[in-house]
Length: 477
Image (cartoon, rainbow, N blue to C red; front, side):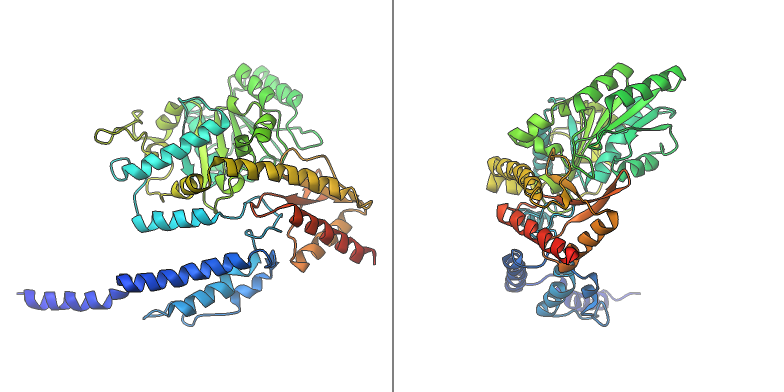
C-alpha cells in the first residue's frame, strides 16, 4: 500500500525543484527591472541603429546546450537576445525602415501585451473573461466606426491580414456559396494571402477571374463588368469580388464605390482587403480617399500596420454581423449577457480561434494613453511624407518618380533599366542606413518606399533622399 507520507515528501521535493517557475516578489521586481531596462535601452538606440544588419549575425552567439537543465542568468539571456534577436535582420522599429508595411510597434502596446499575459485572461468567451471581452468588443466597435460600418456589423481581432481575409471568405462562402461553383474576381495584384485563404476555405478550384488593371495597378471597372456579364451569360454565378484599399506594390486604392455597385447588381459578396490602407479612414484625408469602403460586405484590417501596433494584430469586420456568427459560431445567438452586464458577443463565436490571446489590450491601451487624435495626426503625416518623398525624387533626372501616391507607398524606377535598378536597391540595402524594397509591376522593376513607421518624420525622408543620391553617385562612378 502506498505510504501517504512518502508521497507528500516527494511532492514537497518537486515543489522545491520547480521554484524557478514562480519567482518571489523581490525576484520578480529584479527580473522585471532588468528586462524593462533592456527594452528601454533598445528603444534609446533605435534612432541611430541600422535599418538592416546581416542575418548571419543571428548565429554570432550560441547557447550550448540550447536549453539548459538548470536555467541561465538574466544577464546572459538578455545579452543573447541583444546579439541574436534585437540586431540582425530588418529593423522594423527604425525611422529609416521604409521597405515594407508594418509600422514600428508602439511601446504602449508592448506594455499592453505584458498586462494581458500576466493577467492571462481568456478572451474567447464572456463568461470566462468578461472584462477582456468587453475591451475587445470596444476595440471592434472603434474599428467599425472608423470605416463607417453600421451598428449591426460584427467583427473580431485576428493575428493579421491573412486570418482576417480567411475569416471573411468563410463568412462569404457560408452566406452565398455553401455548395461551391460561384466565381471569384480579383486582380493579379491582390495579396497572395487571398489565394491562400481561398484554398484553405475549399474554394481554391473555383472559377477565378483575374481582372485587368490600370497603370496604378487598380482594378478596371469596365473589365470587371465584362467578366461578370460573361459569367452570367455562361451560367456561372458571381460569388466573390475582392478589391484592395491599398494595393501591394503601389499602395493604390481601387474604385471601391463603383466595384460595390457592380457587386450589388450581380449579387456578389464584396470584400475589401484593407489590411494596409483601410484604417487610413481614421484620419480626414484618408477617409476622403477611401470613399466607398463602407459599402463592402466585409473588410480585412491590420492595426499592426496603419495603427503602428506590434505584429500579430489584425481584424475582420462583416457588415451583417449575424452572417459572421452563423459561419463561425456554435449558434446564431451571438450576443450573450454576463450576469447583469451585457459585454457583447464572445469573440470565439465570431472567430476561427477558440483559444485566443487577449490581443485587444495592445490596441486598447495606446488608444487610452495617447488618444485618437495622435493616431490621426500620425496617419496624416505619413500621407504627407509620401507626397514629399515623391516630390523630392524629381530632383534626380535618372529617376522616374512614378505616379503620385494614393496613400503612403511610393513606387519609383531607375531610368537606366531593371538591372541597374536592382543594383541601386542592392547598394541601398547593403549600406543598411535606409531600408527600401523592390518589386515588379507588369514585368518592370520598381524600387518601393513604404512610409508607415510612426517614428519616420521629415528628417528621415531627407536622409532617404540623400542615401538614394549617394547610391546613384556610386553607380555613375
